[in-house]
Amino acid sequence: MAKYEILIKAVTVQHLSYGEVAARYGVSKTLVHKLHHRWLVEGDAAYEPRSRRPRSSPTRTPDGIRERVLVLRDELIALGVDAGADTISEHLAREHISLSRVTIWLILTAAGKVTRQPQKRPRLSWRRFAADRPNELWQSDFTLVSLTTGADVEVIGWIDDHSRYMLHLSAHPRVTGRTVTVAFTASAHEHGYPRRDPHR
Image 1 (tube, rainbow, N blue to C red):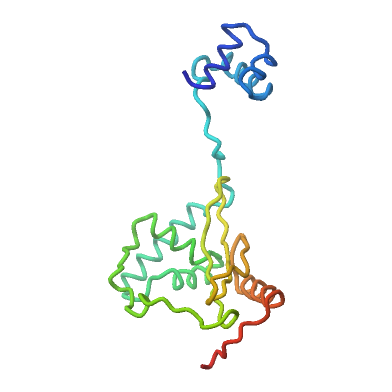
Image 2: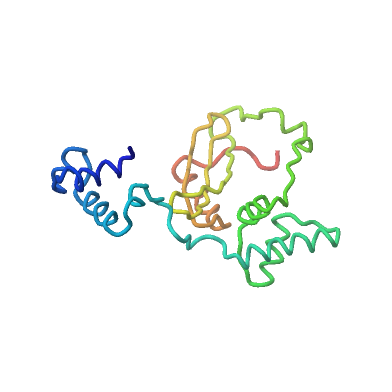
């Protein structure tokens, strides 16, 4: 028997009060009240737990823009030119549509437009590189994270290349050039600037 069914039947069959059911099963009185009233309206369908996922996702890319990304991809491929996320982003910007390359990549992947080709990975990337000393060189990357609310955020991080110590980690609606600059400057003020000469 499902948990909701037990709680509802404690009220409807055993004739316990909302407070008694809440105390016996370690749940809130509000939940018991809500389930009982749901059962009065819906009958046995109230026994099934409801999804907590929001009915709509306000930050989800609108369907029209998603479709435009896919059309652009097909058009660029037909022309025989680069059809990657950066190029698509440039074309969208001309149409006054702002979309991050990560979001474009996710749209293409979800539509089956991206074929992973691990064999194209350069051999040089197989070697692990690490700086000789702490705070000599930093690395940064950002990644898209989907929240339980349905919203997407981009997380940026800076790490010390020698110790792998996380110097900075923050989440943003979208990582922009300004985001990168602000995150780097804040990290440098806290930890000191990396010492590696960029021209070496």
